[in-house]
Length: 275
Ligand code: ATR
Image (cartoon, rainbow, N blue to C red; front, side, top):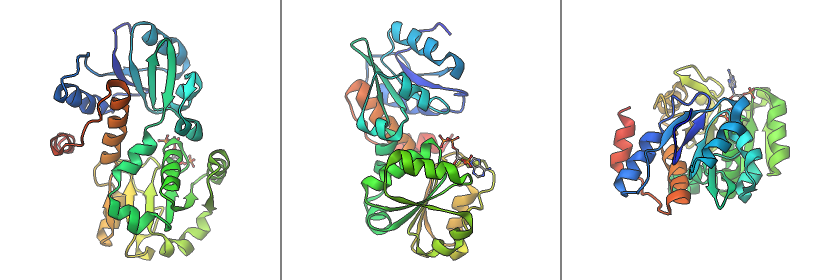
C-alpha cells in the first residue's frame, strides 16, 4: 500500500464501502481540485504505521469505518466534543502536522430524520435503540440531542450498561423479558445491530405489539428493505433505511475537508438506489 491518497476511507474489510461513490460524486459536482477518494484496507494491527504513512504522504482526511473507529479516536491528537462523547472517530483530518478526530455519524443521523419524525416520534417520546456497538453510541447521542426518552436493548446486557455509563446520557437499559412489555409505548425504534446485513433475520421486536404510530429506522442500507423494515412495513408503520444517514455523515466529512457542504441531491440518491 504505497499509493498516495488525498481523501479516502479506511476499514477492515473496506470493499463494501460506498463512500467513494458519494465523495467522488461531490468532487465532480463541485469541481474540487483533488484526487479521487479511495478505499484503503488497513489491518487494525498496522493501524498506526499505515495512517502515519498516509499523513506523511500528504493525505488531507480519512473516513474511518469498522472496526477502526476506536483506534482512530486514540490515534487522533485533538477531538471534537462529540467524538469525545462517543469515544469513536469516523473522520480524521491532517492539518498543520496535527491529527484531528471528529464523529459525523451523530449529526448524520440527526440530519437524516424528517422534521415530522423528530416532532411526532422522538422529542419527549420513548425511543428504543437496539444494539450497543459503535453505531448505537452515535444514535444515542443524537437522540439525546433531540430530547428523546432513550431505552437501550442489546443481546449482551453488559454492553448496553457500558454505553449508559460511558456516555453519561439519561437512558434505561431494557432486559429481553421486558421488551414485549414496553414495546407498545415506544414511538421510535432504531436498529443499530448488524442483524439484517446479508438479508439475515432480525426478529428482536414483535411489530404486532408495536404502537401503530411508531416509526421504525434501520441503519442498514444494503439491503434497502431489511427483513426488519419489511416487518414494520407490513404493519403499516413509518420506516426508513440508513442511506440518508450515510449521505449526511459523508456530507459533514466533505465539509470538514473541502469547506463545502454538499446538498443531498435526488440524483445521488438515485445512483445509490441503483447499486
Ligand atoms: P457497529 O460499530 O457497527 O455498531 P459493533 O460494535 O460490532 O458494530 O456492534 C454490533 C452490534 O450488533 C452489537 O450490539 C451486537 O450485539 P452484542 O453486543 O451482543 O454482540 C449486535 N449483534 C451482532 N450480531 C448479533 C446477533 N446475532 N444477535 C443480536 N445482536 C447482534
